[in-house]
Length: 479
Image (spheres, rainbow, N blue to C red):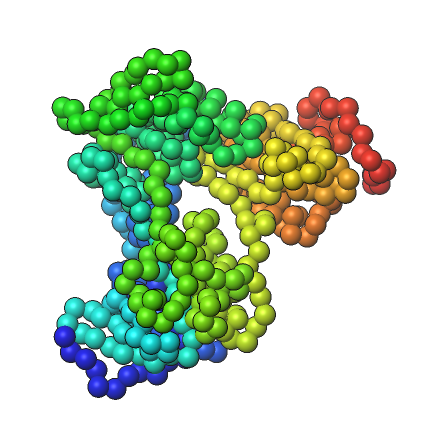
């Protein structure tokens, strides 16, 4: 190991080049700070290189299979309906490479110095970076930790059990796949693999359920059945054993009967822990919880005022959008600004087929929180654009506080859900009431109109479905 005799001097050091880290680096540089970004592997982190981008590219590829029937009804003749997985892998790698190059280009344009290696705090204002036999020492004024999280569990059968990074990065498509859990990763994998020809089974253990509005859950289960994805619920005594060319999964079903299913591979929802092991946090006294997640406030500040933490290393929820928001806030704070992270209107999205997007309270959560609610729904089969594009599955549901007529939740399943939820997010942040959504004009024909109809349905004014008889507590001005 070669140790530099003279330590570099930097204003801001950011450890971790994932979505949160590089976002924080760029924002700090935009605000005039001299920034050093340290990354152990590749810019973009797990999200870009192994997680979000590869998985969503896989889902996008699978989604095209769901369109083939509609395309043929439009008059296109597709003679060779075959999915070449090797071509997809080439495409996926090109996407990842291009996005990685884009992040590097942005860092360069913002004059951010990038250093590769493993970072460890030597003292409260000094950090060491080790890369093979090379070792650098950097003195800093302020630091942001963005090292992410790692899996906190051991595999039952290493030869057949996939982790979340392997799940969407297989060398070939399995004939059969078992998924255990109820999170967004489970649903994305289930629909995508099923559309590409894999026999998929989902197992929900006892007292586990998909964590969405109950109407969304009902539609998800309908879509699973429609796509011939087996769903086993209220399962007990789940056990995996090696079998010929795969695994045998045994369990007791909700009727108390013994069942066995077979698969080439399986994935179980994983618990995560903060990726802090090699940072030397105990050396400088930064506080972490029992799962090694760094404890910080809404501005990202740790118990050391000049050191911040952002992203998955701060704990749930594990969303890139949270990491990026935290990164901007931390960078603005160290640059003399005043800001904080408020996740009240942070959306939950699932790139399933059809996609799901949710923000705010579910109807059930709102009632538990003490709201008197009214809800409205609009089914996509009644929407002209959904019909003509062959995207009829799904609906929009609005949850309104009956006392104030304020939107407190929106839940969508169907084509365009993830883009459409932004309207609800902005409305929620602006404390919008039902009339704020009803008054504007919406593009026609478009799936956007489904949002309008759902809000109108809360007051019994939906046009393109049989309106419910509902009354608004205060008179609405209709223009």
